[in-house]
Amino acid sequence: MNIVGIKELQADIGKLESCFEPDECTLITRKGKPIGFALSFSDTLVQNGLKSWFAIKAFEKGDLSLGQLANMLGKTKVDTLKMLGQFNIPVADYDLQEDFAAIEALFST
Image (cartoon, rainbow, N blue to C red; front, side, top):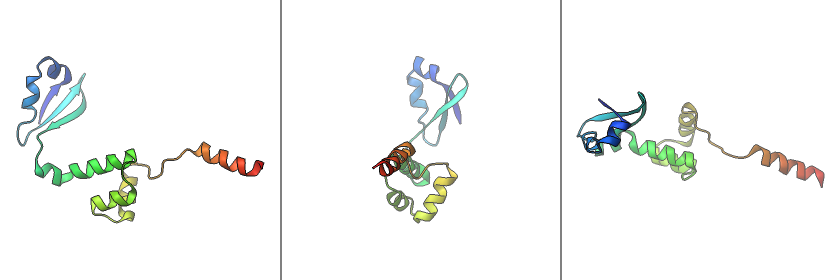
């Protein structure tokens, strides 16, 4: 694995091309701390997890339902829920204060 600083890439954009050599992986850092990876795109990369990563990110953003995510991952909904729990990814995203306001409105009428 190669390591290159973001400032180095900014100063010499040509170095970016070398980050995408076949079967290579480059760690990109800022002030010595990792901020990302650069990898060459290949079918193997897609088959070994990139598709799953994109699907999980789409679920986190609300672009996929739990059922759609499970289908894309080839898992049951229960297994998908367990996996999301292991990654600390919330399954439900709602405003608790909004629920309290609705309950309060019910009792005030």
